[in-house]
Image (cartoon, rainbow, N blue to C red):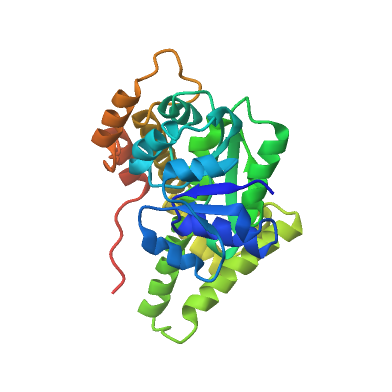
Length: 319
């Protein structure tokens, strides 16, 4: 097993590490941790993992460098990586930085290192994640399989071209929030109609899980299963007519496109995509641009806002 240095040990990195260890894919001796918040190491109490004294120490001791710091801390972390005094050409870099392209990582490090860019989602923390991965041209098939296997210990892995990595965020990275939103709305409506009993949240969640499993196992399309549930003149038809009249599908499309647009903005703020190398920014320019744009909420264009209002006229709150 290759030695893996985790730079940053937050929730996602912790889920990956525990997945590796619980599956037997790695031993504690294969794991090296570094986090400026040393309290994070409490997550690994009783596990004999290695603790690095600095980013440079972690990089020097590992064959694989797992970058899991917050996007706003990437500049500082990659500067330390660059100055680690190690032969970076022999390292494999695995990044879960949202919106940070492989080209940006290479520029910040100052060399054409081998990078696997990943987009996991939060269900990874319970072993049910969906992670998208892509690679630079100098990542071998063996190393790509290794990186994919890191996430395969805690869920499903999709292998994509980097040109698709911003779009996939709307499908796997951000989408758990969509489902939580829908579940929350269902629970609130049920309670507003007087159905306020123990287990209502679990009942909705079990219905979601069962419906998803049925879709995956049946071999049928979502449309076919909708028709199977919907009897002419029945309750489901009445509910589905409300969704269709409100053009809910168009709202979902707008939301997913807004998610992708924000991912593109974040990628541009950190130096652009890997296929836009004609006029690369300097590391200083990249960092300055990222700091200026970081966290700025994206607003819909006037055209998008008008379209959204036309498709979704306001409805009164349920009393």
